[in-house]
Length: 215
Image (cartoon, rainbow, N blue to C red):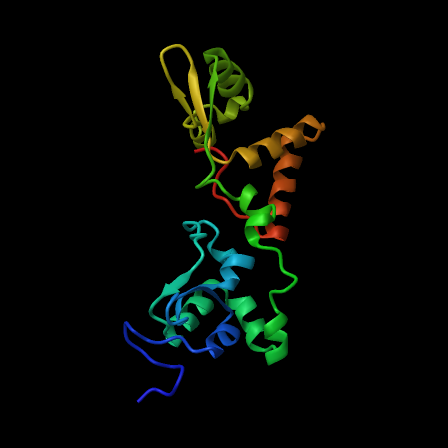
């Protein structure tokens, strides 16, 4: 028989100690009984999912805040925290009871920081730009690439971003905020290679990881 606070099954009850032990926030209570109806993971709200640097080329992790409703299983809390927040979960576990109670007090919700806005390629409204054919076919395709690279994989990959319409090319910017940053960097006079390095450093230091700026 499971000990108190460690029930399993679809109707596992919520125990008060779950909140501080597993970093949970009570979101809803039953109006008639005051029993907890829904809780949410605070690590999701303040830190977001952690990214394994060895798996940056894999599909980006979901940014949805994990919540549990009417089923409060300890094994599910632990599984989620180990999977999505391993480093901060380890730090949290090593904290004292009083430290856990204050753990999120000074934290700013992730949605109020710059990170999700720069790294919102899958959710932000895409920006579509129409470009004159000569810009794509002459400036980008011919002049931008070295003669030795003509017809190469890099050139072909770049040109795939531009979709030919009747009398223009259309390109879709899936992450407008990051795109605007890159344009601003280049407008300051830095080279394309320097810009690439700055963006890479920003991603590494801040934990911002996206697969592409254009798609």
